[in-house]
Image (cartoon, rainbow, N blue to C red; front, side, top):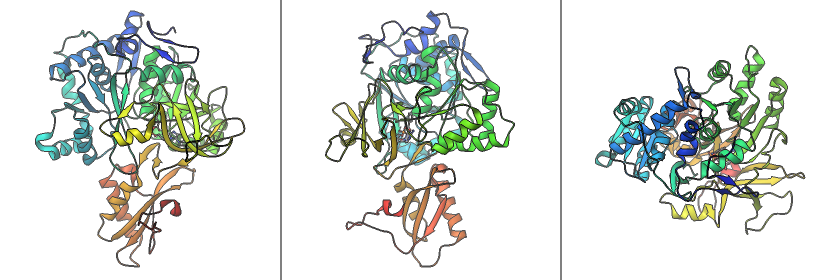
Length: 518
Ligand code: 3UK
């Protein structure tokens, strides 16, 4: 499919965009002009939304947001499950010049209270399922809380909103949407993405690496709130006029295979922990994966054994690739015609990668160091966090915080984080946050949390705990600590193992040395 009018990529894959444009036009409106109005843009278990319906609802949403008093540049926090309304809100906001901020939907009231204040949003829209966390967050903010509305109530406002909307024009570098990213210390950071960023990821990775095309049906078990899922199941299919499949349920082998068998996607995107569980289900038999021509994995490293066993069972390769919230999507990845198990692949054409030592010099070939990348899709700054911005975004390069080396053929091999952050099921987990929760238990004096490999070679949190009274650790306390974490934190963060020790290794300044506990 030709690129949308006014958009081109040079021979060295730099994007050229019109001086004034709105990115909702090439992703949404374009398909009407090109005759795709009757084609399904979205399919779910309960509805099909055509490109014509999508474009109209996007317009009505933009108008409804304006009617609620949101002005260009204002933020709307959208805590929305994977459903068509996610598309309406995201693109309706963008088309009206309003900035959508879709956070992780698995978080707790305290996390949302922080984000609502930090982003200064003029409206919160949330799926009813999340009322139990959003409503306490709003109450906690008291008079500072912005107006809030459930998705269902908001959808009834659409009927009254006009069905046409002129796109608010912007420059390619203007702020377009934000995604929150977590760090090991401190609060989540709002990575501010520009109008051009989704154009770059969709064309460079979606089209040119994966070969996403109009006839594809894209299904991502990783949710839309995750930059990975946002590209997989929204921007990539919309970029080429393909169809996205959405399922709002928690991804398990049962729900994902049911969705795959029913909608027969051609491209499937998962995370390693889910592939491991799905493989066990495939090995047990009776599941049909034959519609899928390409599988993608990201979020954490895909163990080589999982790649091999999956290929032996399904005949399809899983393309592992590393992406980040800041880069927006995958910047080093395997390809259908060029892949190596146990590696993240090679840089996506159009992205540049460097492995540097502590002093900022390039490491010797095959030596490990810090991975930096240069990406035209990169967030330009973190909202209100000038120091974090200065540390992470330097002279057009992005510090990934990951340690990598290259093998003799140039494939990139992941060697861990340079901070203590964990990826659990592909999603960030800060050890400090889990430790702080454990310390809240009256029996606990100190705690350290580290990553520990489960039977599939995938990382899960493990807690090492010092009790106030020696000799008190047992199965009952372990259960209590796990339950406390599940209740207080996003449940995926709870420690799967608890070990009791008499003291923790510390630095001279008293900082826990987590690396010595791994
Ligand atoms: C880690 C990986 C090894 C790595 C993401 C695809 O994961 C995404 O974004 P996040 O901001 O996390 C980024 C960090 O996660 N990581 C991601 N993928 C891999 N480590 N192998 C991998 N394949 O530490 C990275 O810095 O949550 C992934 C597309 C968009 C994304 N946002």
